[in-house]
Each structure stands twice: as structure tokens, then as C-alpha cells.
Length: 520
Ligand SMILES: [Zn+2]
Image (cartoon, rainbow, N blue to C red; front, side):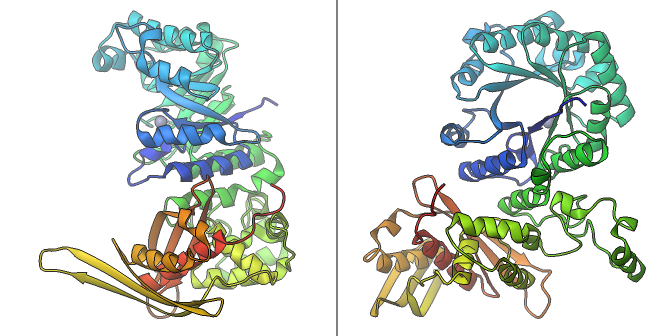
């Protein structure tokens, strides 16, 4: 069977979705998740569209990945300049990424009305840009933008664009349903026709979900000969989103018999989906196929009884294959093996079954450990009896005052004991968390100077409405950087947002004090 290449566009195209944003550090964490999932190519963005992207490429150039390769994304040269003179292409050449994807026009309407160049000039823009990158030692991919719209208007020209890229040395041409308006039968017809017109040219497919068919369209293209699938985790992206790479992977592997990832990697599908949602501070969609919390839920009595007798009667697949479970809590999915593995990495010995019980309890209250790896590590240490609190709390207090001129001032006071000695510290800050952090660290850095290097890089608050019981619970997720490339997450939960923040803050500092794990 043909090998299908997995191409993730979460960090570039996926970020086009409304209200979505990740810091450079968070993107690095996503890259490692994608690598562990078995994704072949990871599109990181344009290496210098803004300081954040520049920082991302700088960080990524130092990361070691097991399998995946990083792709830099740019455009074909502008009109009226040579490829070598084009600033954008020069940035791509200067990037460490071994693969570059260029977006180029393949629809006559766009060429003539939007870019306003002749058909010939557009073909030259494609060919020269690809040839330039290849001559500079890059592997080049063309994303043929608006391909299917172009195909409907002038199929001959759309094919000319693909041919121009292939002849110039592109290793692959990706047919893009940029407007997302196509249906599976159209995608299949067009892809098959390109395959016949240009035998030997490796094709890819990039779909958007405007007709609710992005995954189906992607599979249709694979059926018609495409050998690279592009998508984003959970289908995030502009408008209604991109094709959901998680569903594509599951369908290719479990329904169509393509071996795109290992079984072990396939079992990471659910965790990966939740991980990205948590970083984006989105509640994971419980109804998402394969990875959603309800994807294998059985509410009706008859179903539940059927499942108990023979699961295959009411389940399309065994949920464990994709790392999901029958309507259970999220981290429970991680399972015993993962818990044992994480504990081993930290040089700890724990009773995995007991840890899972504990996590289950906490998740029931509203905790979530997908991105709160720092808090999870502390939990493991507590379970292993290898935990020492950083201090003993007497009290903390926080005063927020708004003046008549609109200015808001925050002051925090903490009273703690460290090694039997009492510390009382007060600090001001731009908000409660900042003020508490300053006061706490003011005391602690006297004994632990390296805590001064820590930086709170992210602070996310979500009101959990799904919890049972009385008041709404506030959940705070905090990301902390040690200033040397390590980032960890911590979590706090309380009816009071400041108390939840305090808890996450303390976890974050305590995590910073833990010995480095043995090995790598
Ligand atoms: Zn797109």
C-alpha cells in the first residue's frame, strides 16, 4: 500500500481560526506532541513575519525531533523581481528548516483579478521560486492555492501550474481547496485527472471544512492518488476550520488500511487533541469523533448492556486504539503505562493504579493535567513519598484598589515559614497574581536564589460550568519558564480566582525546586 505522508498545519493555517493564539514556547510544545504522534512534516509558519515567528524558528532550530521535520512557509516571488531578489524567498533560504512550502496561485481568476499578472508571469513566478529554493538546497513543496476553484474555471491552466512547480523541482504539489467549497466527488475527479495528466508527480491535499466535508474530501483525494494529507489538530483554522488531522489519521489507519503511524502513536491521538485544546484554552469538544469525551459514551440502558456483553455491537472501533475510553475522564486515558513511564523518567516509583485513582478523583473536581505537567509531576512525587513542601503557609492576603482616576493598584502580603523561620513580605504588582508572585519570591529567593530566574509566561482562567455542586469553579492554568528553555504548566482550582491562582503559583515554584530527572 502507498505510504501517506502526514503534514500538520496547526501552527500556521490553524492559527487563522478566530481567537486562537499560542506563544512561541507553546508552539514548541505542540511540535513535540506532533513529533510523538508520528507527523512527518510540521508547518511552523513564515520565519520572519513577526518577532514571535522569528523566536519560534530560533527555538525550533535548537530542538531535537525524533521523526518530524519542520517546514517554513512562504509565497512565490513577487511580480517584477527575480526569485533571488525576493525578500520572502531569501528569508526561507536563510531558515534552518529543510523543507519550504510555497503558496502559489493556480486559478485564472485569482491570477488575473487578484494578483493582476499574466498567466505566463504566474507560471514563471511558480517555476522560478521553486527552482531557486531547490538550487539553494531546500526541499520545496507548492501549495496550489484555490486549485479546485481554478479547476472548475480552467482545468488546463490549473494543471499547468502544478506542472510548472513539478518541472522546476518541487518534491510535491498540494491541491488546495482554499475556499473549502468542494464536495468529495469533485475532489476525487480533479485529483485523479491531475494524476493522469502528470504521472509521477507526488500530490498532496489541503482541505477546509466549509461544506463539513474536509475530512471526507481529504480521504477522497487519497483514494484518487494523493499521497500527502494536510490538516490541523482538532480541525482548527480559519472560518469553519481545516481538515481535522486526528480524524484523517484514524480513518486512514483504521478504515482504509494505510499504516500512517505506529499503534502506540495512534493511541496518542486523544491526548494530542486535548493537549492542543488545553494550550489554546478551549474546552475540548466532547462530541469530536474518535477523541471526544462522548465519542464512546453509552447512555441508554440497552446500549450500555450491549456494550458490556460485546463492545463491538455498539462501538465503531475499540476506543483504546485511539487512546480514548468509554465516557471516562480525560487523564484516565493516559493509562497505567503512561503513568509508569512518566514516573520512571523522574526516577520515581509509584503505584500506577493508585495514581490513576487519584487523578480520576481530581479530574472529577475539575482538574486537568494535560498541560499542567508541573502539577502532575508534584502529584507523582507526593505519591512516591518524594515531596517536600517549599514552605509552610501562615496566610496570604491581597488588596485590589481602584482609585477615582481609574488607576488600579494591587498589593499582596504573604506570611510563610521556611525552615522554621517566619517571613512576612509585601509587594505591589499589576494584578493579584503578579503581586503574590513578587511577595512570595521576595521571601523564597533569599534561600533559593535561582527562583529569581523564573518567568510566568502564561496565565489562563476558565470557569468550569460542568462541575456538579454549588458555585462555579474557577480553573487557573499557569505556564512558567526557567529562562533556559524549560517550560512547565501548573494548575489551581477554587471558587475564588485568586486562591486558584495562588495554588497554581505555588505548584509552579515547587516544581522549579525539584531535582532534574535522571537521564533525558
Ligand atoms: Zn488553508
